[in-house]
Image 1 (cartoon, one colour):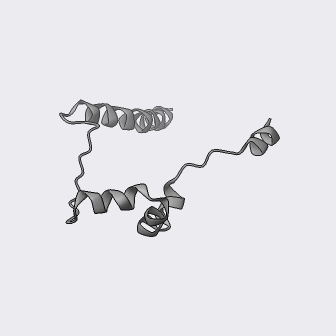
Image 2 (cartoon, rainbow, N blue to C red):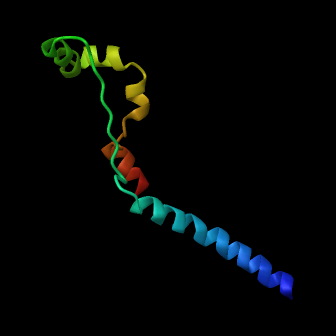
Length: 82
């Protein structure tokens, strides 16, 4: 019977420890803040042209844009689900 209590204790610890670890990680200074910086050695007008023009943006970003974009279902797909 002792082994049952030990197994239950280990299972409880495995369930509780991840939550305690995440809670402690959330208490540290600067939690949830990500800072990134990219320096592009070009004039602002040239850079923004590539960002604002769809054809140039597709050429610059390439296949990443398709994989990272969240696609909303079309009206026909939504009606099929309901």
